[in-house]
Image (cartoon, rainbow, N blue to C red; front, top):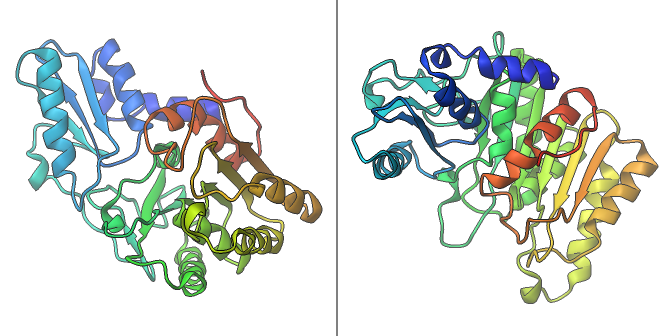
Length: 322
């Protein structure tokens, strides 16, 4: 799906048909941001959004979003949509969509309307990062996933409580991709951040039949300051990128001032893909973004979401947004 078709998909949402022009524009922005997310209407019909909230369900997003909306509108606000579910006046708790079955170790994004392998345009699998002492299995997917869901993709997660066995996790992810393809998903995209990006790349190296990979701030060895030997992290990354064979389109993103980045990885990826013929896009230290979690806020998908989606879907190389 190209840029024009993506814009048409945004405008054609059944829920958005009830909105005024200003709220419609805000709703289109809302659809290109990651869950958990909520869209609200003020008493004057103006639209408000809140997106990228962690949780086993969207409850925290609802609470934070309504507080924000009411502070801005100076009056009570009405929930219009939660994640990709248009409420049409229903209470969000009783409007939960049906849950599709797990696919191997993949599970559907909570409170998300998925279509299933026959009706969906494809499947995008989010793999989260990891931080010691936190439950990353309820973390929010980064917003670039939404450019695929609005184009008709189902959204699943590959959750790991620990990251002690990345080869085993990579094998399990590759097996789940094969199962998803056998179920009828026409396209499967892997997207991840930090340890999730590493697992996505490693699963592809191990032969997962994916159509695209979006790897953001890939890391697996902890912060550089805690490494005994940074050459191990660098050499294992080189092994991964050199092991990926042509077929999927691969996007690799790294940011400046990333405390987990040993350096040189963008060059390693570019060289490996040039040698192997893998169709790739390497985004090296884009201006305005800094740190390991630079893609966690909504600024990254707003600037890069359209060009990431276009490259994975068609191979088109578009400049980032403003």
